[in-house]
Figure (cartoon, rainbow over the protein chains, first blue to last red):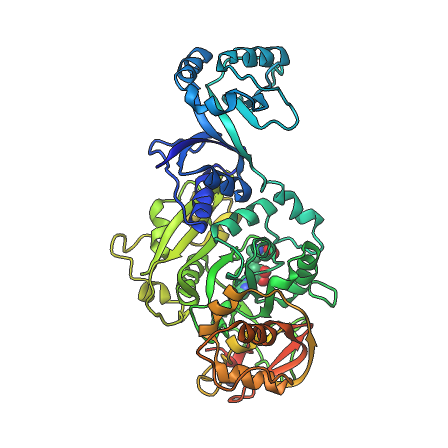
Length: 464
Length: 123
Ligand SMILES: C[S@@+](CC[C@H](N)C(=O)[O-])C[C@H]1O[C@@H](n2cnc3c(N)ncnc32)[C@H](O)[C@@H]1O
Ligand SMILES: [Zn+2]
């Protein structure tokens, strides 16, 4: 049986809110009832939960949840709100006699003048609470939220438009969100080791939640770079493997590798199992079905271009490059010698990544990764073109940067069949990915993303 | 690092090197013992992927004889403790791993193995 709960979200990453809480619900094996007509852009939503305990689990883990209340009523104005509230005294009856209490009156996108806030509280006196008012440590906190429409940076007086809210909500506080401060803890700027590819802390935490990271799970980042998501997944108790084609990204300049130094500072180094240097398209993994999740920010060529071992095709007629003699001595990867690499086109990389994940994940495991897309050109089917049998999209959330954006894609391995590791051959897209029946010639908008980025997404320049 | 769990999950992947390419042999390695976090779920989750003989051999080569030659059917606490120690607490910091088949040398420095192939070894 679901009862309604009022969720307040942080004012960011709208499309990530519901996928995040559904992931955490799945992690704890419970379900959430989502209304069909939900408007994810609004900061307040009413969702169905089966118990207060479920609300607490969500509020403790979800980065985007500011608070969860037992839902009492909502209204376009206070008359409507009170009319509904008056019909349900049973909701707070058990607190009437002697519970200490307080009521918070706050607004979203607005500041309510204190005098009016006091009046609002007065107007609820019919609730008949007999206990002591306690502003510091009340047994019960009632919350009244007014939701104002975003005025989009227009300058106005602090209290201008007071009372002209879109909707007002009433509930009883169950739990304040306590995971949000983690974004400060893992702030990149304050990290012992980071680079220009490091992923923002809040996003790294959201990604970790999409993986269902928890104690004892094994999680792998094949493009680990400076390790941003290794810290957040390890924070939630997972054991982490990382690899990168460029050892210097993982090491930095000191003897102890940078990722290990940063992880030690966070107290999660015991869960960084190992870091290895290799090209993921030429990887040394001995077997599949090892990981509970793969979490990664693939190189898409804006900062850290995708590369793979091999040589760029040379123009015909040019003098052949002298053959590189194979090094006979063991070669550390922090030395200047870097094997020749060639560029790796993004749509090929994405398709390969999903095939690799199908091989390396345990059944039911998750692949969580970012896919950059050109906003004007993106189509739903772009993501479908990358999929292969046994891999299913669970969530797809856009982080919008204007002319381009990136989508956090969460994919579940739904199959328990055994698959061969992918060949990473340039033709592998058409040969190994069977889902091309609907749109045989569809070219996804993330194809050639790097070129489009540097042409500033001006279609005229690359369509010809 | 390069813990024995990792050593057990990596094989030589040079072009054409598909048989007798595992386990990689240790060469001139220096090891450190470091306490790790015990988690039974983690160990049980990866146990089915472990090549038992390779693990026991590697552990013995590095001086640890706590694991039985045959993988026990019963997973009890005592066994998990020893397994935990072998898989997670023995770290190879320097040295190399050598392919028994093609002799490719994978160097380890500051605990990170370089598994990159050279140009002529790519498939
Ligand atoms: C966008 S960055 C990931 C950054 C990382 N999330 C961090 O926190 O620093 C992509 C990484 O992929 C690596 N890379 C590029 N091509 C690769 C390949 N073929 N195999 C493995 N790593 C590769 C780059 O060296 C770079 O560190
Ligand atoms: Zn070999």
